[in-house]
Length: 458
Image (cartoon, rainbow, N blue to C red; front, side):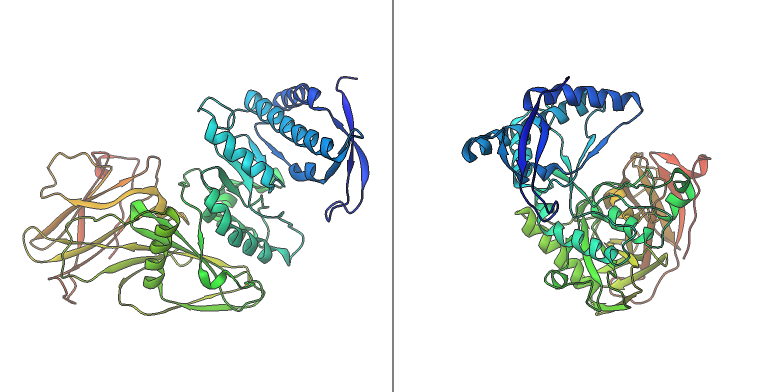
């Protein structure tokens, strides 16, 4: 009695596998329905909605007994009326960014979202990017689906990342406290999109979230780029690792995400330094403009290039020359890892020809910790008393040699790691012992703050 209904005909689809007449709330009444419905949800403490089965309108072929041409036009109008009603009610009762668009991989929705966001102002409902499903569902109890789900999501980023101006990728929810939870959590973290879970309240403890690498300090970053060797292969059946890269331009870093989505041990040889260069070149092509990493510090032109490579699973750091050939990576089924490659800046000592190679690794407690760095090592200060207020400033020195370096970290970062290596001169293989005597955060000495701990390792 409250809402007017209209009878439509639903045709057979591979999902529904039947045809039938269905009664739907008419476009004239759907705004009142969603307003009442979402008001009630907000009263129950609901703060966002995940709206499923959105593309189902495309299974309708008849509207109120009209002709096919008339029905098609009216169904499209109803499609838009439902979206408008849902979005306005969600904005009214839950706020911005409160809808996850599920089962919505429809050309109609994609083009609608692009059109609205191009037209509207920041005050309009569609001004923000939509949270948009990147794949089919997560099926926790179908063991064979987990590798497929990860492979499908990573492959779909080939096209979905091109729509990142309009959409935030959603790789679907997952459950904690399961054997495969960790690999799903890491996949969501590197996806650059939503990270959300479902399950019992008892499963969501601080320790369980920490074990999965999930916390409130995760930094935003771009979607991954699938390695070309994985693009036209079914990686669930290949004895190799699913590889993707995420470029972090502010940190001169490339994060290499590695997943074994097969049911067997996977071993893959890879040239990491070549992969670093390829990731930057591919990023150039996607952005359609020259994309270069920052020229940081005082570079010594005759010194060789070095990379700091941090492996998340082992918490180990490797400093390697750019001429290094191959690494071999091995992963057990449904296991994963990340390697963060950061180009080291070569810095000449003001007092001598000694060279310091330095890199800011960001928050190494996170899988995408490199994204916490807004700007990599970018200047040398001749004196630690120069008065420049930098978010992170370190004074590194050896006997009769010293360097003052700095990098900019995003607010809220709780851990910052630097990598250093020093030699007597450019091109020398003779290492120098290093010590770090001063660290400042936002102009304040670490030693003066009870909120920070300072730890140095060779």
